[in-house]
Amino acid sequence: MKEKTVTTTTGNIFIFHAFDVGEDINLENVKEKQLLLRRPLLLSKYFKNYHIPLAVELPHPHSSSRCISSKLHNFGTISLAYKIPFTESLEALRMHINTIEDEYREKSVIDAGSIFKHIKSEIKQPKFFHLAKSYVVIQVDPEANIDITRLKEESGSAIASILRFETESLSEYQRNEILESAVGYYRGDLIIIDTEAAFIYDDEYQDLLDLFEFANMQHLELQYFDRLLDQQLNVVYEREIRRLPLRSYLPFIGAVKNDPIDDLGKLRVDISVITERLENSIKLVGEAYYSELYSLLVAKLDINNWRESINRKLDIITDVRTVYENKVNIVREDLLSVLIIVLIFIELVVGILHYFK
Image 1 (cartoon, rainbow, N blue to C red):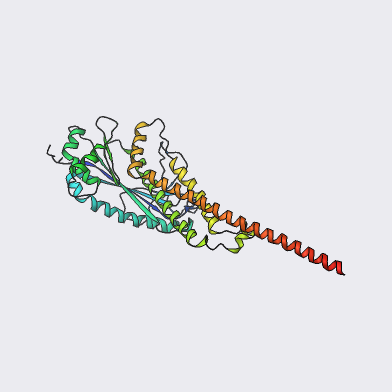
Image 2 (image 1 turned 30 degrees about the vertical axis):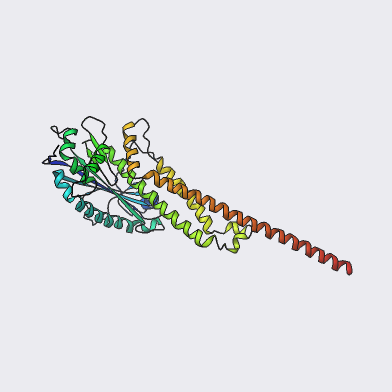
């Protein structure tokens, strides 16, 4: 059936940005020193209080009137959310969705950078920025005369192109694949989740936004930890395992002194704790619909594969530490044996000399 363009739609574009800016942020010091003005924090009922963020105002002066949320997270992340209302056809929107996304990507870098400058002193190993991730949600207000079937028929091609940030129509196969993944709770609702964007045909969407913001941030942290583990494992494998420092073989001293393997072990613990808390921050027991949406988000963002990659590398760290410790223990045992032999030899020499006196 030939598609017809819906003349005019109203809704909002929500863009979520997350920046990893360091190992951790001391939120208590940020509050006590009043480095930034605070905003009221509305905690979603779907999240446990593992990581309560600090909601702050953007430092003045700024030109980001569309920024509806800016938060600091104690594991070293700044998250921003923008809301851009629109009134136009979906066909028209797809022609400049890329321009909007690019514009607010640039704004987010400026806004996050201004926040970073104010809190840099309270960030452990600060850097602007290690990694950044974004996700776009297009929310359209339902119309009484347009049901889900008609919406898909008339605007399905435009919706599919918007979700892939394409100005041209996608192939029928790609279009159908995107639209077939749609879900909804009530009869007139429609939600389509894709890898970089989602489409919501509903006017009750506030609770859903928290899921998108969290999943984007979770995606960021998992990618950051995966990259960090790669870097640390390369350093250890290429340099430190081949040339163990002499102090590592000395009893007591070697145990007290820090070395790259000890740092790797601490990193393993830190990453394990943060990833476990991120994975268990959402409490959706008894919320089948939200659980389904979150599962779709996890699948589209490939979060499970990132988790598996991190877990494999954490297992490698365990193996590296085991090899390292076994090697050190063997050398220490050999040193102890040599010391015992030397002591016995000295005692023998002293006894012989004493005998001839």
